[in-house]
Length: 201
Ligand code: GRF
Image (cartoon, rainbow, N blue to C red; front, side, top):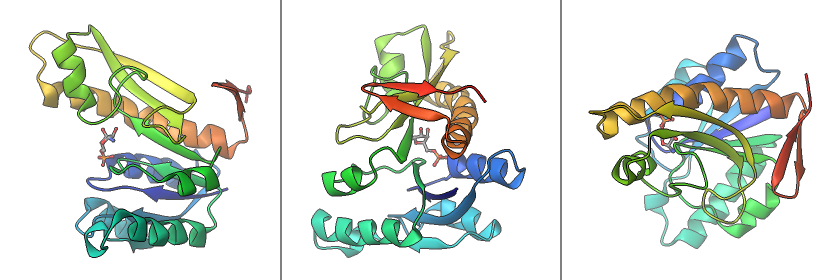
């Protein structure tokens, strides 16, 4: 299978996925990194791995619609079987989401449906939950609302600040996102309504 990864910043989740591919733990090839941010650190990570980067610079467009036309073209041009949103920080328009239905996944640093949207780790701290975590889900036209593939929880510890909790969650993100990519590439995921069925390996 081929995958394309969308990232907007640091790219540690992107690295986690391509490292597992490099180690032959995932039967896939990453054919492109696509980013909306020309300064994304993920671009350096792609270059180190010999993966082409495509920059669709959001700030170079007069409006969101024009941006999405080129972003959609960039995604389609990869011909990827799976689109992975790994720290991609913009909402995707319905046209792209419908075109990629069932083959676009996202990692979110909370146990959805709790704490969707931005600053999920901060939302969890402010709410005072004892357990936080992360979710990989299929992307639908809502925000962080598609069928859930994998989740993992972490404890919230006394004295945690946003950075400490975010770092603890990030370590689990680096485990469940590659695992979800592997399950997809091994054709072991079936969507049944809101539920995702995982066939045994
Ligand atoms: C991750 O915590 C991800 O869940 C969230 O933003 C962060 C991206 O980190 N969407 P990175 O760019 O993968 O290092």
